[in-house]
Image 1 (cartoon, rainbow, N blue to C red):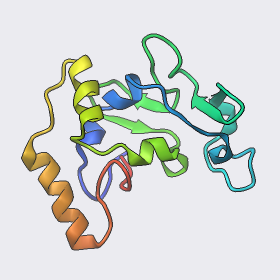
Image 2 (image 1 turned 135 degrees about the vertical axis):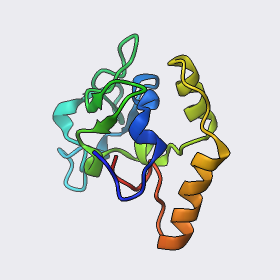
Image 3 (image 1 turned 180 degrees about the horizontal axis):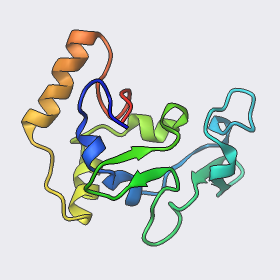
Image 4 (image 1 turned 30 degrees about the horizontal axis):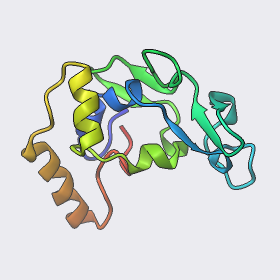
Length: 132
């Protein structure tokens, strides 16, 4: 579950247990170019699917491993959807999800470490690109 860069996401998981994780159906692996396991999704419209568990109340993605606020990971991290890749630590959605689960917002130092890693490696060391 751990990445080469310690991401605050590996000690959180709030976004995975707060939002509906929906995305274009072509991202699912029943499409030739898709990667997200279709068996873990459910259709919500002719063009959109959602990760199982995220349409429930309270939502919790079926791929989330561990307990929110503790050590967590994603069972399909390498195959996750664009909606997961695009959510960045510290952005408004992150803050709202953490707040719902009683977690404080990320500090500038936590977010700054990710930015430094991005500059040093030429790739993002964030929720978007480093494995939890």
